[in-house]
Length: 250
Image (cartoon, rainbow, N blue to C red; front, side, top):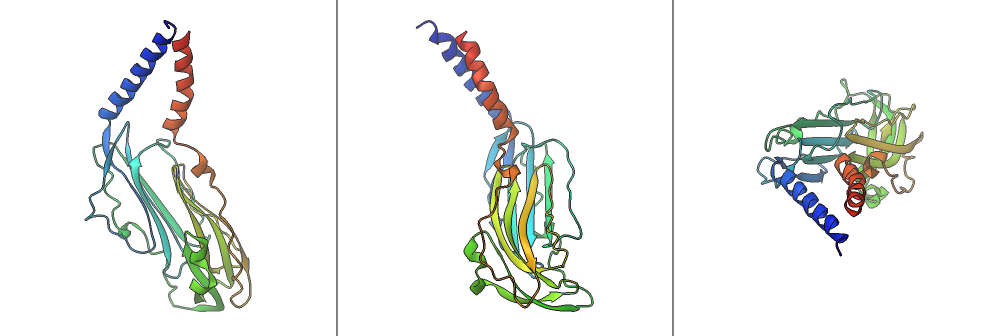
């Protein structure tokens, strides 16, 4: 019976330390949602949570390039590395964009609140020349969102002479949503999404040439490595807890 006392005391102290850390942490807004058009959070009463170090907010958006976006908005505790670099390929399609912001004061993650934080990802060429190709265009988070019956027929811009269809994931930290898309593309078929240490837009798919050729059935999206990795705080806690229990038993 005496052997169990140190472990009980240790667990109680460990729990108290976690509670104390939470009570002394920053107050940060907590929110996550997927939008399929313009959004405005300014009139919403967002919930808040206690964070140990920093707050963060992020927006990821993927667009067909023909006025059909999927936008992922997330706010919460900062769990990633303190610094890093966003990587993107300006020649890649479909067009996408991501922005991440961290801050260190109470409820400071309230800057990215409207669709105005995003650039125009469906900007028509000037002059508005067409390539002559016609493709199906759609985007969504369910396979059925991109059924042919729900897809639009679009006249492709400029050098976009191929059609594309694919799927993937949009990820912020450990929060991820699938995405399905059909649209116009260039013959190079480059689909490198914007990535950073905190976010990823991963796509896989194929291009074809021919009238409305991107009409195949959609497949399930693959898992993003970023999405399957738990936050650093959870990893550290999972590693420390067995060690602390062993110390308590000794």
